[in-house]
Image (tube, rainbow, N blue to C red; front, side, top):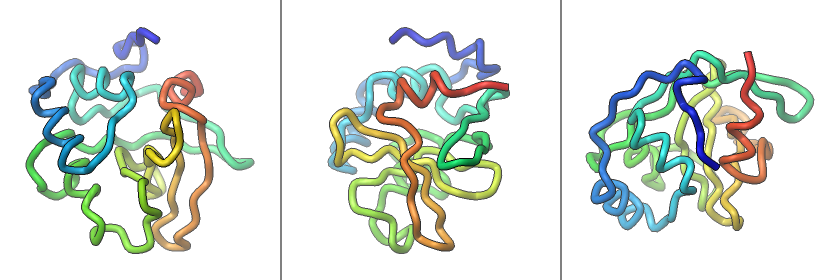
Length: 142
């Protein structure tokens, strides 16, 4: 799926190259979906203007994607991917973004293809949003 990120109001600007992607994947022990890699190579901390989506009988929107960096600093995918950062986060869930209410939008690498789940850090409950990252992007609307 070739995605026009600009159509979602995402500004281009990224220092992410394939070496950084490979480094982060090795460190976290995951393979990210191709379309997610395309996004972080287009904009390494995207804040889409069009990003509302429905899930579990409700809806929300993406507040921001976490910066994609090989440095384990606060609010990066590498930092959130460490096991002790988010209590009770299911194994294989990699937080990549947060919604407007502070819930974590995660890629679940336990599934093939990797699905997108939303995780409530207060209740420790997760809900399936989409069966793939491509499907997740197709759900976005104003």
